[in-house]
Amino acid sequence: MSARPVRLSIIIITWNELENLRRCIDSLLDKVDFEKDEVIVVDNGSSDGSAELMAQHPQIRYFPLDRNYGVGPARNRGLFLAHGEYCMTLDNDTIFLTQDPGTIVEDFFNAHPDTGVVGFQLLNVDRTRQDSTRRFPRFYQPIAARIAASRKLKFVNDELERHLMTDVRFDEASDPMEVDYVLGANQTFTKKIATLLMGYDDQIFFGPEDAEFCVRTHKLGLRNYYCRSISIVHDYKRRTRKFSKLTIKHLAGFAYMLKKHGGIYRYSLSARS
Image (cartoon, rainbow, N blue to C red):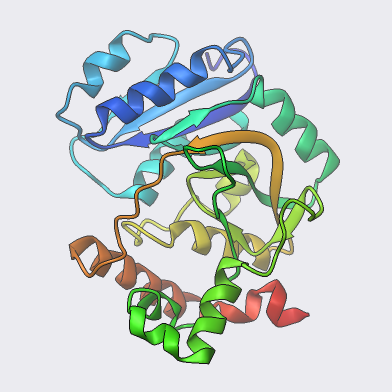
C-alpha cells in the first residue's frame, strides 16, 4: 500500500469491544475508497476475538499490541504507521454515515489551509447532534463536573455551560465553525502536523489527550474547526462521570496538561474575545 500515494488514513483503536468494532468496520467498508484511502486498526491487547474479526478484512491494516497502552499511545502507533496525507481518528463505537470521506477531507483542507484539527459531526444513536465541541476549561471544571451539588454555585454552573458551548445554536452557526477543540472520537489533521507535534502526548493514558493536542495546534497559530459535512453516529457511553480508577487517570491527565501548558483557559477563543 505504501507504494502508491494514500490520501486519508482512518485510525481506529480498540480494546475488548468486539461488537462495537464489528459495527464500525461494517459501516466503513462501502464508504471508504480503498484505492485512495486506508483504514488502520490498532488493538490495545484485546482478547475478545478482535483479531479473528480483522482477519476477515484483509483490506484493513490491523496491528495488535501486547497490552493496553492507553488512548494516546495507541493512536500514535496508528499515526506512525499511517501513509495518508490526512489522518482521521475514529472511536470504535462509531457508525460512519457519509460516502467518500477522503474526498470531503481533501476538499476541506484545500479550502481551509489554516486548519490544525477539524472534527466532523457526531450524532447520537437517535441521530440528534452530539455535543462534541468544547471550549478550553478553567482548572476546576473536571472535578466540578463530577459533583452535582457544585452546580448550585453560579460561577461553577456558568463555567460548565461555557465549556460545553451550550450558548451556541449549532443549527444556525457557520459551517465550518472555529472552536477551541473537538473530541478525539473524531479528529482530522494532516500527517505533517501530526509529525511536527510528535502526535498525542504519550503521558496521557486516557482523557484530555484530544484537548491537549488542540492546545498545541493553537500554539502553532492554526485554527480548529467543527464541520458538518461528514456525519458519524457515536454510541457514546461516558466512563468517567463517577470517581473510578479510570476517572483518576482522566483527572491525572488533566492535571498533567495544566502543568505542561501553565493552564489552558487563556488559549480559549472566549478568553480572547
